[in-house]
Length: 97
Image (cartoon, rainbow, N blue to C red; front, top):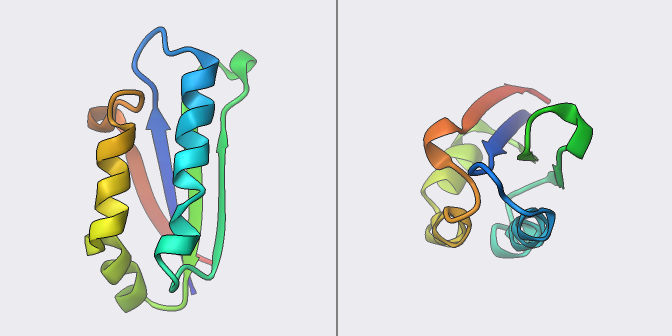
């Protein structure tokens, strides 16, 4: 199993409702990408000092993760959130699940 962790900082001054819209948009992923085995996405706490959306997705294999990374439906969601999430400052890591 492989765990994919995405941390997407927001653009400065991003309102809370825009972050919630991103969370709700990203929650569509498991329905679009059936090889996601486990999934969660949340926004950071306001008091944490960093405004960001954190997504964790688990896959059975590296091959499934690679399919996800190139899946057009996944990439299309990135286009929908880029006005809120500063993709130039995102962090993406993979770990054992």
